[in-house]
Length: 162
Length: 366
View 1 (cartoon, rainbow over the protein chains, first blue to last red):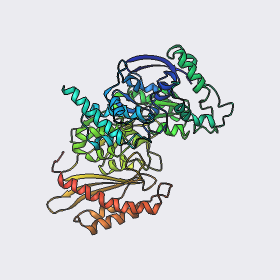
View 2: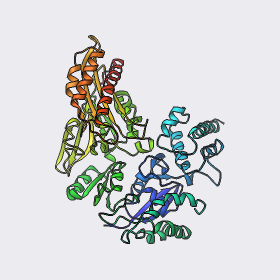
View 3: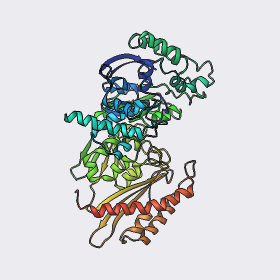
View 4: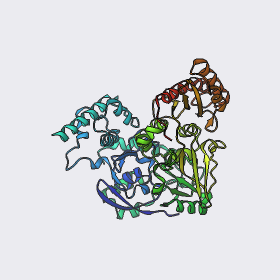
């Protein structure tokens, strides 16, 4: 059995080549091989959403995704969102609306928001709640998170219009 | 990274407090090589100091590893065509496991319920992902079509809204972007939501192997708990839906504890063809999830409704017939009695909703 296989992963626009066992999940490779610890390891069952990353623009649970299968795809993690130290609009809205408390769930929520707004730039509150069902937050009670997502959507639309 | 010690501690608490034998307490293999082509020095030190020694690999049977939740070792095979899959299945039959979306299989592997020597990944087999209209008005769906694609596909929403409804009720977007309809069938779980819906739509599944292809009705796919009729060298390649008649419609109702992200306690799929002239049920198909060791169709209940008007007594009779045919089990999730109670209520509602959808649809797809 091969202990190590070469992996070529494109993460936040940067190509990484590394050797890893084929039984590594994408989450494990991101955190342990590449030091990208924004995606969190928590339930490991697809219930909590803290490990969310985008694969070809779509939100997925990286704890349920094999790293070997993420090759040839465009992977985006929370580390790639801010540009030159300036926060992305979604991140700004989360900060401004109090959507971040302990912060453990935040990368997952922010990336799920990005995925949602890619498909639906002006989601209703129901759309937002529906899109966030796979994310748990034990601090905020979700209200501020929903407000943050609404704020991000309207700010991004305003930018687009202006 | 040093800035978040509390989170790090919490995350690996299990590993720290679990009593590990020396055999299991081995460093992460692969860091030596990974170091040279990815990790910066400081990160490497961090990982080795904080993670490397704590999270061992799976080393064999009998070890209590569930709290560590690493996947067992396997060799990954990546075919790119149906033909290649068939060949790999033929040569690795007993030791290989097909990996579609993998959202269920990864959990089973973490729990060591299944420890395959080979994983045959299907995500690179492009010809398994499609939704095609058939010449006769039906639809063919590739086994690797994700649930999110089913949920958002215009043709599915227009002509087989039942399937979009089922997809919407499963997990969240993160799961639906990965989980596939083929995987939902092949997993053969009694709580899976797609089998009952596909049964009521009269769907068939195509099984392919190096020896050829065969088609099996979804209704006949599940001989016993957790099993499908697929031989070890066969795999699901596509699902065929027949065209739907005029004035037909379906509904899938399930009970689950929360509103989302949990398993189905019981589920009822109903597909109704409505006779708009005489205002009676022309045809009804009903199938159940989590109501027997396998997904089942309840034919007696269907017979009760055929030719009847839409009225409470007919629904009551059908619901009682469903409860007679169903054989749910008592588990930590719900008792048999509770499930039967739920089935009675859900059956009536599912038929009612399906009839509404049927009466509202005028489009004859064929």
